Length: 222
Ligand code: CTP
Ligand code: CA
Image 1 (spheres, rainbow, N blue to C red):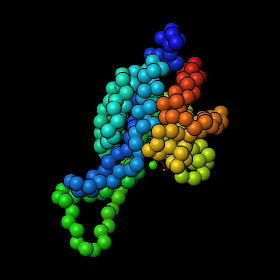
Image 2 (image 1 turned 30 degrees about the vertical axis):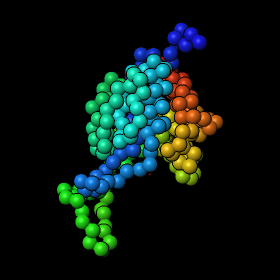
Image 3 (image 1 turned 60 degrees about the vertical axis):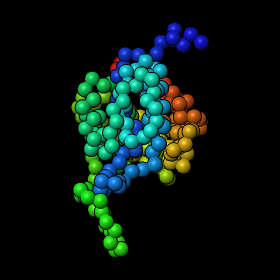
Image 4 (image 1 turned 180 degrees about the vertical axis):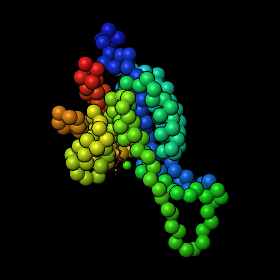
């Protein structure tokens, strides 16, 4: 009640985020992707808007509706996601990498549909670039938040990602707790420690992440 009278925690802030999977073509009809649903990224975009931020979301291929008030840019490949993210970076206060960005892509994309030969087929993959790592390493970096979806050793991997990529905050979860579903169970990792949140619907988890982010911003600004 009277929510509009409450001060908004991200009022006047600009937030850029990536969401969803990427799709790396192999040939005109096939490609490599992953099972990210985009739901966590879309929920976080919505929570940032609710908190008063101006939100730009670079979205990989998902069929989810755009949350009200979010400016959405659709992309397919990790290279397109990187390009759209860098293009939209100037003036942003926060960058949140929620997307499950491909780590590898086919080195050669066949111009024609690959025909089956009855023999094993070898695909050669090359590394993609790390969008979040690249942005966080810039001298003019906004406050950067990463996600770490792990299948094991959550604490160790999430903490090492936070340090390696120089992030203010990492949202860690076990893939078995979140991927594709309506709920998620995450732990927040920042320079002061690890904060486990109870399992909840993704929009509720997103609002908790935003509250934590807003408190970090106060320190970042001040
Ligand atoms: N990320 C990114 N660009 C990439 C790969 C990852 O921006 N090419 C971002 C993700 O959006 C996420 C964070 O980096 O916020 C961590 O992604 P994750 O896949 O968990 O970590 P990686 O550094 O790719 O390491 P690995 O997959 O080996 O665990
Ligand atoms: Ca990865």
